Image 1 (spheres, rainbow, N blue to C red):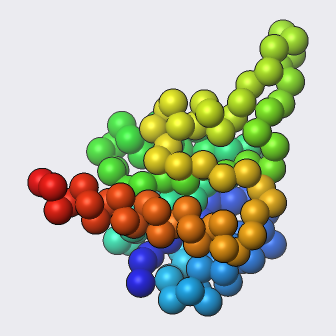
Image 2 (cartoon, rainbow, N blue to C red):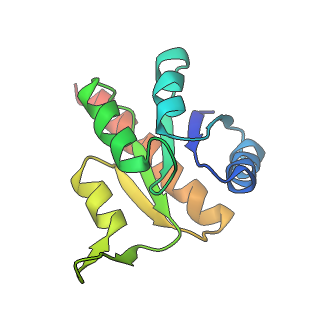
Length: 135
């Protein structure tokens, strides 16, 4: 069992992800934005974090950067409903690619299936376990 932090401003999405995880034996901890998520990282023994990219107050990129700057090595899975958005300057940003460049361990595009989500979480847990064994 792992403790998984879910960071998403859409309560229905967060609760659905929480149900997916709990049905597989994991514990879900919810946060509505990156600021709350940083507080949860301080309070709970988080094994994996899932963060939406675009949120009010503190978005996923800011959460990711702040968590890494604060020394949190928890695996972070970035998620978003669309990996590409048009910028005002006419270029495209690939949010999931940017998240990985900023320190996300993995990424997943919404909508995803329960199996896809659990596969990503398990991959993070396995990578973390292998990392700890090699220390």
